[in-house]
Length: 362
Image (cartoon, rainbow, N blue to C red; front, side, top):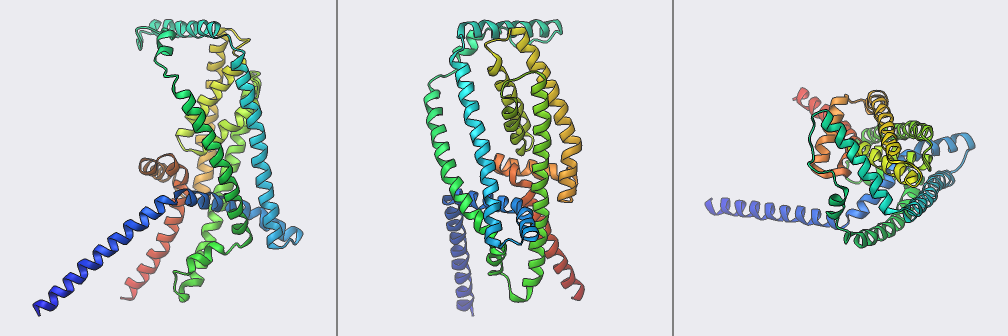
């Protein structure tokens, strides 16, 4: 009897060790192919955003699935190309502005701005720095990282090119075969439960489609407000600067700060050769005030409507989910927090109802 118990324990230990080893191997494998997983997630999101358009083309123009998917993907590709074609000239223009910059004159202007800030703070009895000397600040900047940044940028551009074609290829088939994701999931689900989970997956897709379309509406509203703001102050490349600042808002909490830095920096470099130091300071102040007002509108009007209405969750619930995901997985976690939480919540609700019914019968 003891020998039999020992064999059972030994088998249990071996099984546990094997299961742990298999899990670690799976995690290692997923880590190695993480870029492919990212491609799949992006393609899935794009396919969800294109789902309403594909349905419209099929219903309105009687297109076949393949043709409707191809036209939908083509529209997204054209949008991406337009964004890229606008981004490259803006970078060229900003580089040209910097190449024509008189750095000695620029340092004098910036030192004048810092002196005025220091005088203002001292009048308010606020002491942050003993010395606002720009030369000391510039001396602490490590210029050796510039070549590394250029190499990193080239590497990123190469990865974006590869990722663009990979995501486009995957997105086409996800749009064409709308049940592709469902068929993969159903391989792990008993036949008796397929109809129930089919309804659940359709429900998840509909909610996520509303969520991502809501994000598009949010970015469009921010882009419109930012464009108006920058045009009021006659900033060069106002439309493109507004677009990229709006896109950064896709990253919760961190994105708006990065958008403000981008907007102020590009606005200054666009006008740095023909604007006096005090005018630059006023420009930064005015843009910052307008930016804060737009962000307040977004936080109190747009986001509650998008998050609470599309995913049917309380704003505090969404806030906690985003913060927890950001703590665990960084910026990527903050971006995918809401859609991931929505799927998990719907799945857990379904399992809870099933578990509750079993307990009731028992």
